[in-house]
Length: 232
Image 1 (cartoon, one colour):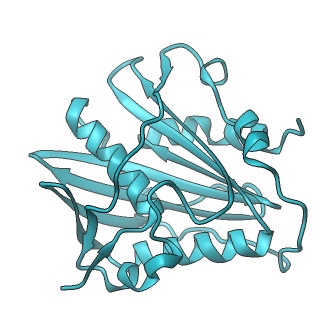
Image 2 (cartoon, one colour):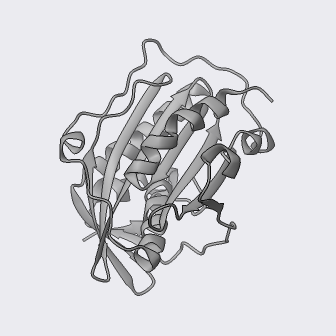
């Protein structure tokens, strides 16, 4: 079996689920009808070049507690060592190599991220990532990562002594922005099973990725995209 550092997008989901399995109760069930849908990747024309936004500008466009509503608490950012995180049993992810193997996000210069815990009904999490680059690069990189992850219905990810069994399924992406990708990731670790949804929307030179409990992703994706588009 091939082993390599896992992709940044995969790392986001893995660390999300590791947090969920450590503190969450029952995982949200996956929507079976949505999981069998084909992801949307709609771009009527070739993306054109446009000025990128700085990381500071992207940070201003992240969702915050007032945007999300009552019951949400922003998690402090922590520095993670990712050199011990590996993916097993998915050659397509291994072949991406250094193109996607970073520990702090996808390989774009301009980026911002925020993660939140929601305690309205049970402990759940949702995170948002914003990236800015040329539309063509955003489209190529995120498309390649999603295609690689979805090429492997099942594989494993290890982090230290923790082994996570992973499954990936396509799910319908909303008709937003210029291009869309979406997937459901099922994680089993330590006797717990969790489902994380990831939806990525490219709008011009901005890439928005919302990950976390499926219901929370669906609830906040529209407002994340709207705020990401807002000029500051």
